[in-house]
Image (cartoon, rainbow, N blue to C red; front, side):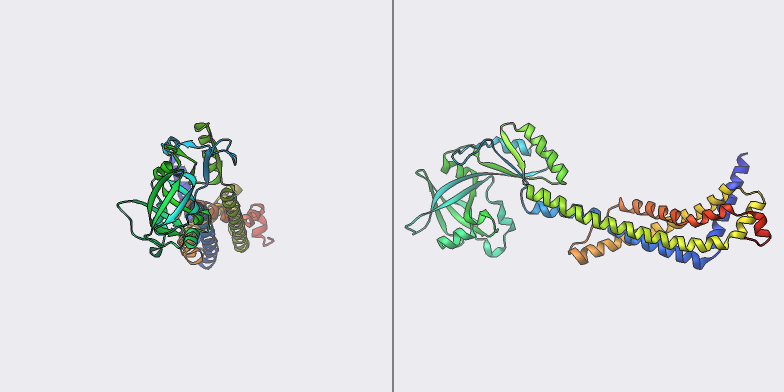
Length: 384
């Protein structure tokens, strides 16, 4: 019994091989259609998957997307948080966070007689923004006194220059700082002076206290919302909320890009299926005599259809493998040409593309179903 099954299986695949090589021109046309469809599908799917990562990276570069503040803060209330909150946020989490303490201080430069009232922003660990500024905006780093970063509007109004010395005063306390950088962000930082958190705490007489914590959480909007829920439970005395402009904008932009690319992939697959279907219609017309002979010698209709479906599946497999690899390489080039950054090849795209191409090839073989209704007698009498 096993020998008979092995013989039947061997004969089955020999016939499939014969069907594939019977008309090499038609074989090339079908492979070309499937390969082109697979290449475009793989390129678009890879761009779609990479767009999600790219958008997440770009939005995270804009700054924090989650803010932790004290509860019940009003205009007349100067509530603060314990600085230990920062350690709880960073503990065991893959996030970046910066603690701030804000206060209004009198600022004057060396030789200035009229001090100005400026917002002072104490940052945990000092002004980390130095690494992102151009060389022209960075001065020397002082080893003997505190360094600070001055917003461009403050520098313009007070006629400040790099490496100047500032005197910061609040409630009778004074701190001197060296202007290490002048920053222009287009945001509220342009009207502030950033210094070390411990220096700001000393000026405000609030040791170990902070005004808020800004957190940059990587991941999708859903992951960010889950993180906010978890952090709210861990910090019952604080108000944890996301910056909706970032999360909603990211979700909307990705939704539109994903929808457009998905619709394009669907159109490409439909067109590919139609091309294969047109070629298979000619195949069905050419193989009427072969099918009649197979049925006349005892071949079952189901077995005959399996032959043609196996042929279509093999064509889809070959087209998917060749076109998928080409499409992923194409997406890398497209990402660099269109977005300025090469897209990363995503391995998950390759098997998905091959599976879709096989499905399209089998769907395109629908015209072969009409061969099941052929009667051997009609073929031999020349009636079909």
